[in-house]
Image 1 (tube, rainbow, N blue to C red):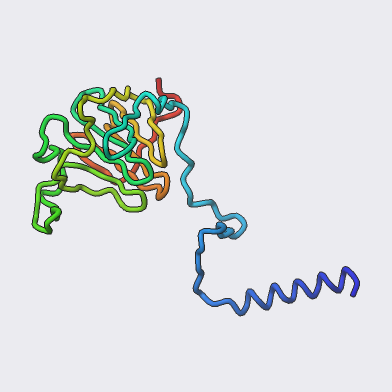
Image 2: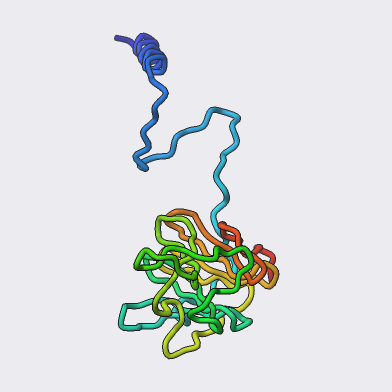
Length: 200
């Protein structure tokens, strides 16, 4: 079989396979699906690494294992990255009462299943950002306080990243799921807010 005949045969097989395919696509996470020519990619750009802080400056070794702790410049929020598990924040002043975020739910299911006041905001490795009711302070360094993460600096460690911006507040992201949160006392949005590349 010559090269031209082989090319024609392969084109026929590809056409036949395309015509017989159904509407179901199985995504095994092994490769990305190509988009038709001219279709813009729906993905967002990867988070910036322009303003990374030194993660070693925030590491601590509590009994539960190595974690990364920081306090917001205002001193109002304590946050921690628990490697490959979750990232979360809690109030430094109001523990164990509500965080004081406008728009936060009044109650969430507690550890016993009963309604409880949410006192922390968490992003698990693979899930959505959620308000939770913790029985013990989990995201504040004890003894503390943790080192301050300055405005416009990014703490990236063990699959998560966080930053604090003067206008936006505290923002964290799971790099495993690309889900995140941004919050301040004025409100909450379930998405990460990156530090602008040109930020001081």
